[in-house]
Length: 154
Image (cartoon, rainbow, N blue to C red; front, top):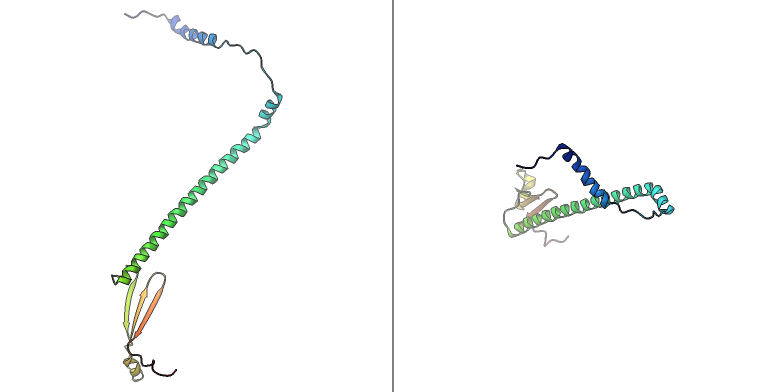
């Protein structure tokens, strides 16, 4: 059976522990040096320290904004690079004669459908009109197969 501990021993156990600690702390300070300049700096430095904290917080905030801008520019640059690569791939595909990309449509129109006697000369010179449309530009190519104007004087 464990030994019985009385209530007084339990209640005074803390006091004994604190007494031991006090005995260890009994190092007496022999002298206190008073520096009026240090005291004055401490007492008058509240405003300076507060301003320093504000300045450091502002610098930290500004640095975070700068890093966010750098990150946003890098993302934007990567997007632009990706778009350019896609456009170049579409252009290379068009040059090689592969299927045009989804953004570009090809429409082919042949001559005029009006039958009038004045258009008889134009019917002889049927023209092939091809239009290439994209988001940014419209390109029209006209191919005239018989062109007799090359030999005439201008």
